[in-house]
Structures are given as structure tokens and as C-alpha cells.
Image 1 (tube, rainbow over the protein chains, first blue to last red):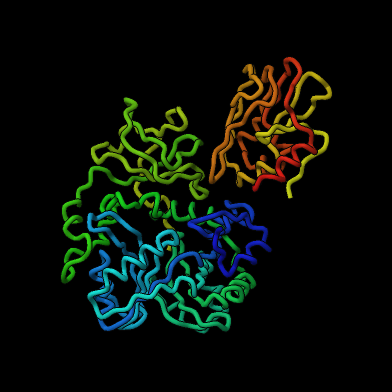
Image 2: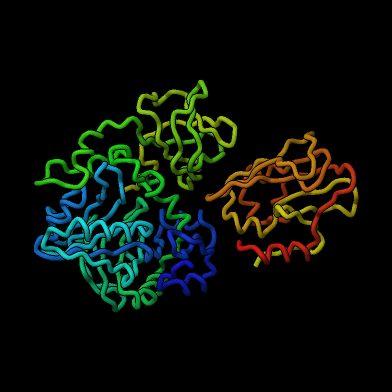
Length: 358
Length: 130
């Protein structure tokens, strides 16, 4: 039985196609997913992300506990700042990618993916045990609504007195939105400017309705996936798994070897900085779509890698994909993807596929 | 709610067949229900004119943002025409599945079997979740 977010009835009333995602019944799309994608690229889209986790870490040693538990250095953040980071296993494998917000000197909010929320909370409790820090999984108490796109600030500004222009990328502050208390964060997963609003479950519907009345259009998970793929952002379960390190995914910069003290995975990660495979972007020359699990082959037909995510890109008008390929494979090596038995040529490109105009 | 025109025949794989009553050449497409389930169709591959097809053969494919599905020929015979407009603009499958979104035409060889009436297809799709 799938769980429902506080916005479930709203999605139903909008006629959304609902699908199970990580144990939650979530909107896949409300109408045309291409139109929803374009809305986020050109105006402002509204997402229900209430399935994501909210784990609070508090106490005098909360920062030190997170510095040990994660590969990044949240303890060095100023209050109000946020970072993209990861939690790794002792062997260096990625258990989840996270955003950590430092809300106050002794208060952090860790946001894991829905599928990993229980595991991340459990690991944090274990890893923080020696520290003067308390880990509390409050995922069940919070809804998360994101407004993303070039018009996001203009729309949100009609509903809050918070200083949005002063709120930099990857910062967050408490504020009142449409009359309810929220943590307003300038973060997202779309490659556009935008905000994520953490509110109490009971406040989700009024905030959502206020944002749609202000002009934001609902966007489902299908468009969320094409938006993040165009932006070259990894998805846990696809590009990131317990078998992959941050270095495999080209995200070694999140690992802070120079921070004080030990952290979980440090020794293993130090030895895994030159992985045998690397994550690349692929653009198909034809119109068939390379999809998750399809083999990448070289000119001789030898399998040299595997697609982790693929979709038709609304912004490029071509199929795009991310794939792990052997590190030794040359970029212009005549690569192709085996699409149900047919070699379909692809070009290797730098990530991201799409970069917004500033 | 998807539309299921009464005058058409259907397959369990969500194709529709028009023109059976005239006997010779039928038009094939995919149903509104299937188009809704797929989402935005971005690529359509149809058989080529002149191809000989047998009922139940995978003869093409239809791709959306999230998935890809085979197109099965509902009838046996020779493909006599394909819809270049839908190849050029696959969104016609979503916007007009029973009209401009048709896929190909087959000169039927023998008596088609195993096709569903509109009523039977409605019963079938009522039991599935789009």
C-alpha cells in the first residue's frame, strides 16, 4: 500500500496520472509532460516533493557528527547555507545523495531521497551516537513543495515578505509564505532558478493553492526526470548506487579529504579516486531513445558501458542519456547504444546537456 | 476517460482497426487509451509499404518520454501505405489517435480473427490501470 502525501487529493482532483514511486503514490504527470517540462524552462512549475525525507541533527556536536557521517563538511557551513553532499558506506559506495541545510549553529536539516530516508536516518543515528548530537527523523511531519523556473522568484514574491533577491543559491531561511511558516530554500533539481519550501503537512494544500493561483503550473515526476537529466544531475538508483563512489559519477569534489578528523568511507574513497569507468553524456543521432540498462558498444560491437538514464530531451529535441563507460574508451570512438538489437550511433558530450541563461 | 469509437475493431495490445467492413484494406492505429497510458509520444516507427505482415507480428514501435512499446499488426496482409505525417510529428498519436494519428494501412489477406468489439475493448481497459 503506497503512502500518500498531504497533496494526494489535490493531484487526484487535477486528474494526475499517479504512480508508485519509492513507496509513495506520486503524480507522474498532470497532462502533457513535455508541456510541463517547458513550463519549468520558460515560466514556473510546481512540484510536490513531500515524499523526500527530513532528518534533523541537533546539539552542540551536530556539525562534528555530520562531518564524520558524510563525505562533505557541513560543520563548516554558516547558518543559512546549504550543500549538496553524500553519505557513503565504509567501502566508499554511495548510500544516498543529500542536501544538508545548516539552520542554526546547532541545528541541521538533512534531506535524503524518499527511497533512502529510513536508511539514511538509521545510519545517521548510528554514526552520531558518540557525539553530543541528536538525530530525529521528522519525514512524516513535513511536506515539501518546489517552485522552479525563471519566473519562480517573481511568483513567490507575491506570497512572502522574505528577502528573495537576497537569498543566494543554496541558502535557506525561515519565512512566511501565503500565511504559513516555511523554510524557504533556493535549491532545486531542474537546472533552473527556484525555491523549495518545507512546510508542516497541514500547510501543504494552502501553500500549493496559493502558488497555483499566483501562476505556477503543476509538474509531475516524468518532467522532473527529464529536467534533471538535461541538467546532468544524477539520480540515486540510476547514476548513484551502493556499488558506485562519488568519483565514479564525476562528483569527487563533494568528498572533503582535507576536513578535520576521520569520516565514514575515507580510506576506501582515497583508494578509489581513479575509477575504471566514468559517467558520460550521450546524445543520440537518431530518434530512438537509449534507456536505463541498455548496452553501450564500440565500433567493433564490444560492450564498453551501460546507460543509466535516458529520455527524449524536450530542450534539445533529441534523445539524451547518461552512461557509465570504460575510462579508456575514446570520446570520439564511434560509440553506439544497442537499442533492442540495433546499433544506434551516439555522440559523447560534456555534461550538462542544458545550462540556463543567467 | 478515453474514447473508444463503436465502429472500430480492437486488439488486446491496444491497436485499433478501421475499414474491415469494406473487406480489402484496413487502417491501423493505437487507441486513445494506449496514447494516454504512454504519455507524450516522441517517436513512431511504422512498417514499410510493401512489407508482408502477419497478425500478431511486432511491426513497429512507439516511444514516449517514459517508455517504449511494440506495435503489433492486428491483421495479416501487405502494408500498402504508411502515415508519414505521424512519423514527422508523433504527437498526432496523442492529439488525434483515431484520425491524423493513424499508422499504416494493410491489404488484408484472409479473414482477421481475434479482434475485439468496442464493447469488449472497453471491458478490457476498464480492468487495467492506465
